[in-house]
Length: 80
View 1 (cartoon, one colour):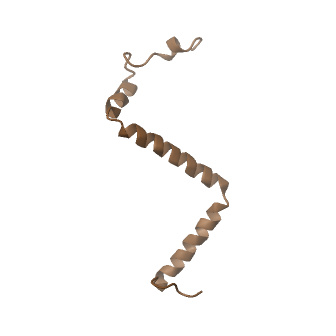
View 2 (tube, helix red, strand yellow; view 1 turned 45 degrees about the vertical axis):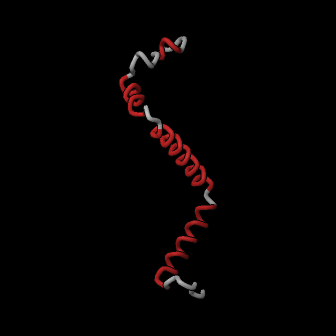
View 3 (cartoon, rainbow, N blue to C red; view 1 turned 90 degrees about the vertical axis):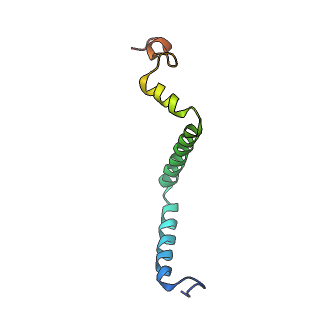
């Protein structure tokens, strides 16, 4: 294997090793699905945190503020 221009030989082995791990991971579909799930959750969190009223809504959710939330037994018939 010829050294690439501008890449020191010290890093060449690391780069090949990283390429190998990437190619190996590409065959594992569960990793791709796991990445999709991580990115989906990250997007949801980023969207929530970006709202100006996030802190207040988080407090309401933690305390179960009755002015904002309806108890499940009232909202869902047959809930016990």
